[in-house]
Length: 161
Image 1: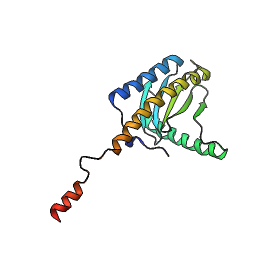
Image 2: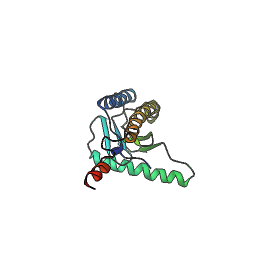
Image 3: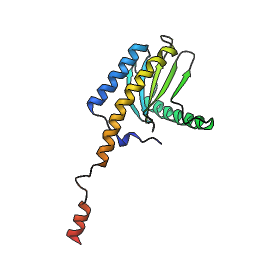
Image 4: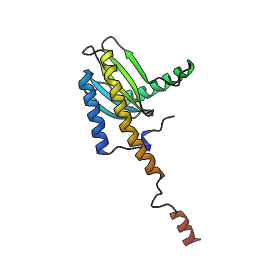
């Protein structure tokens, strides 16, 4: 199961690199908007046209959609689905897994094609996976370092014991 956003955090440089990658993706494929959602349903970032819907509710539903599809994949003998596509009459969305903890959502209309979005998404997923794995590794190493207060409880017990 994915670990939520509470176990990792961005630096300003991380956020800048992620935003730059998403802006490049949108420019290359002419999608309207890109959203990053963590697997717990928290909105991480939005780049491009601002959504006309509630992005918080959308993030929650996106995470639930990905989780439900993971279960469907298991039923047919797959470990998971790394990407999903939903096509509407006017609007479509393509979702892709990033480092098993974040979902990239591209919203697009008839100004582009699914083929172009998929093509450009592949490179973007690789780049974002690399960026997020650096963030997660930094978070994991910070959690493993002993706290400055480690052992403080024992010392307090000795003082009052």
